[in-house]
Length: 185
Image 1 (tube, helix red, strand yellow):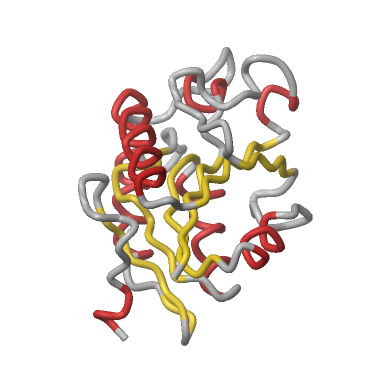
Image 2 (cartoon, one colour):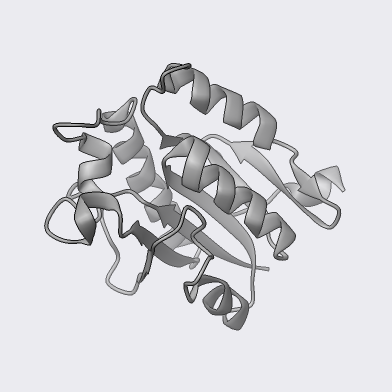
């Protein structure tokens, strides 16, 4: 089975925040973990895909770019999106299918929006998904602290299934590109 790492919306302004929006929870740990997972993906010879949200920093300038601390491999693919769903109106799904990818590892931002949507959409699109437990983040909402949102999504997305494909949640230090989905089928 071929693997791909999806790094979703790990953009400078989204992670750091700006005058009107706070940065994400545990940003230093998030950035370190994303870089660690990128290294694991390279060792596993997995495809690496970055998805950027055109709403961040109005789709331009340094704030729109992938965070400056993240090590972007030269051969990584980059897709831009306009919707919460990274697959909507982008070449992402076609790319993954053309590459015969069967397993996705997901990291990035924001947990309750683009990460949740990507996990759920991927499972109904023919992929098993590994969500990196400590590789996604968000900021506080009016109702919940960011840490609670992340914990909640790690709980509900572990074992989320759509008959044939489902998601598991694993920590950065685990062997993420050696999927464990078959242990649960």
